[in-house]
Length: 192
Figure: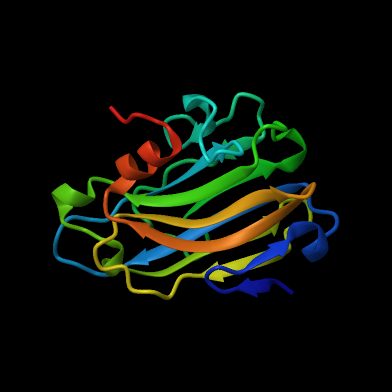
């Protein structure tokens, strides 16, 4: 049975599932019905060092750069419609291949062209992050985002991070009004 986290909560992945080394980070959401432009939300992952920065732009995994250099992170592709009963987008993570100088894997979701389309996370419901054991298929951890994010166009759903030699997962649920650009600048990437 999956452990449910609340915002700010964390848990050791080794304690939740001792066999977990290969996992699926499933991210989901349900855009509200609108007569305006369709929604296109995008999941991404930042591989961060101890200073909370990427080592290079290769540490930004998203729909245009779907695999990390060492193969630890693989993005399963962009679902541009958001239509799905379960995970809308997934990121595969092999914890045994994550470089030792990477301390945090930050899972984020952004709204594509949010400013132009006049869309925010206030128009998105049913958002969640879940961690699944890739080998057994068992859901290990789940975090449902319930807050109303009326001005935010980017969201940190959660983080998988090292703490005293073990991997933990934290439910973050922090929104940003500046979209993907704001998230990239925060971790040391200069958007185009």
